[in-house]
Image (cartoon, rainbow, N blue to C red; front, side, top):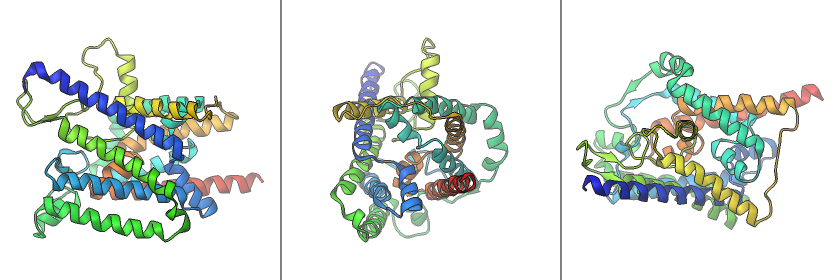
Length: 371
């Protein structure tokens, strides 16, 4: 590819990212997909409907991503999730902070964007605070604390931390063959688990989960295959066009929120350009708004009280710090990361769920105490 042809490729990646974000937002708005709600429904009512949808999305992401690996179209090592340096404490602690925060803020990063599309001014405030906290955790005051504490615990691995690479290193066979096989086995186990419950056998559960998971797979194909350059025409290095760090990526919403605010604030700076993460963030809001308007469910919403405001602000800060520390949110790690079968993603997922459960128990305790 020549330097003159590069802008067209970048534009193609960005338009595809905007479409994928809009599709994700539309599906999430239409099906009420919500990872925080999934955990809350189980803890408060024993209802597994939304968790079943999340699990179907996870299984879809695993199958799709590893099918791409098996076909030789992408490689897990090109993502941030499959690093050979495992950060278990960062994944666990960051996940727990994010999970606790998303309960206080009435939803995770993706749900915040969906709620903005539905008319929530509360979610708009959460977006701004989350973005600032995330940026401070990437490069500011919180970054210093992160690097000197949880990030200091590094476990070096003999290969990338995705399970196919680790098993290949142990002599089980080539990673390209192991990836689809492992994904099929795990997806089947998830499908059986989901189908055991009546709510897991509903058509909308499967359609919603499949749609959300397909958006993640689409992101991997767009950045990992369509945007892949084995040799950049200027730097002569392997890169992925239109992404933030020149690496393959898919849907995630904490760091991209920070980059979105950064792009808006420093728009006149020529070094600040649109990326896949930024346009998917915008796309989710647009897709959600389109469905909300079409269904006539668009409603302006504000804070109910001072305590409600405080909870959302604290939750937003915790999500910003936790999401960056864990290298992803309920979508970034709980879907996109898990699709790569990375060890860190499984730990982060567990931390997010544990943090959410702890926050829900805390809210129950508060209600009982006040009552």
